[in-house]
Image 1 (cartoon, rainbow, N blue to C red):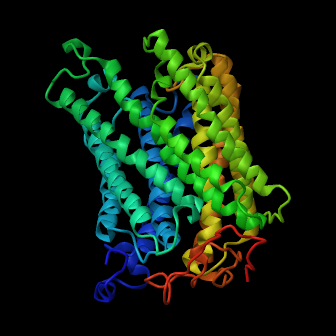
Image 2 (image 1 turned 135 degrees about the vertical axis):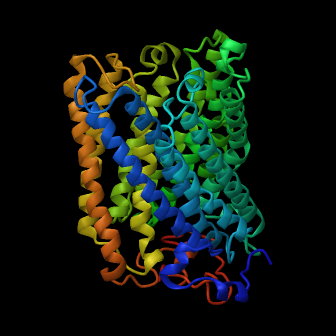
Image 3 (image 1 turned 180 degrees about the vertical axis):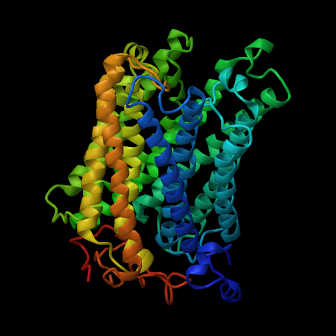
Length: 536
């Protein structure tokens, strides 16, 4: 059956630490593979970010050449989005948790699941290796033509191949999650009894399956323009560069929700446990996820208000983008209501989760501002957009990734992470993040363009403050790395359910057995039933 693993197959799998280095079909092993691989690329992307902020500490190009700066900038964005955030919030936690939540022994297609993961390392190697085979891509992570048609062709084509591999991995994963959630639920488990992360992953997977093929086809056409000198997007040959923007953003705006919706689901699992309260407004949160999925597919052109869009199009996309704040706001108030009156444990997981709520609402406010055409035209392609994007993607998603590691680490390893080190990690990250990206709102409003290595000297002080914040964020990684590695061997034993949680993954041993439970999967009708069900 699809939801069980053959005893013979599991016997052939490598055991111990070696199982994480091989072609495993165990969803838990694959989840950890995604997590560790993603964090490696997070470190790579962080180094690239440090190089960017070092260059921007002075108003002239005195650290990197202009070409090298463009390469670093392109690689940073691509690595952080496609090799860190998307694989971790979807692949890592999705693979580990979703089978538990639906009462399955594994994903619907275990071998396809492994293939999806093993497409990521070669894609990352291709991307980084492009530095050494003619130079990396220089056109930014958006790869807009005609710029992407005039920069060195080898690096751009390798970039396209890498993103195509990563997109293929996402599509395979999305199909697997949809099949698992809809078809492998244990008998008697209704959709409206699933933990919220399942709904988040279902919505995310729908977005992935609908939008990612559009990006893949677009990049293939772009590759034809570069290699075969066709004229799909090349204005010199009658192509239309604005059509590329429409196709690119049809994927890349939903990509924001592909990163953020799983984070919404994860934080919705963490808050009730550490507040000891039921998740407030379960039904409204489900429908708000579905609304975000629908609206997320029809707001892409708000990225293009300066691209000659006609007035009717500007009006439609302004209204649609403003509407998406409604379901997002519902979730924000539901999280606050979940915390209100709860017995809150201010551990590391909760600190990062609460900081996520603050960061994300600030990013959401600037997002609503950017949806308004006059303001967007004023700050388009400035550092205001950079600040907004990072408050959504880093302040939202990455803070939740850290919260999730602190929350589920005992499930992964059977040991607890050190709380004082976790608190230090949080304080350094929170201060460094806001110090880095907060001043960029001021820089953008006052006219500093993004994606340039040289700028007006009047912006020097704020850039130096931003660079100091980036340094603090880099330093914050050190206690986290030490904590994760040290605690894996010497950390305090956690027991099977240290948080006294009610969701199914905690109703088995920590770490779990190969087939998740000894005996049948538990039937959990109220995964957030704190105060309704005795957690003991």
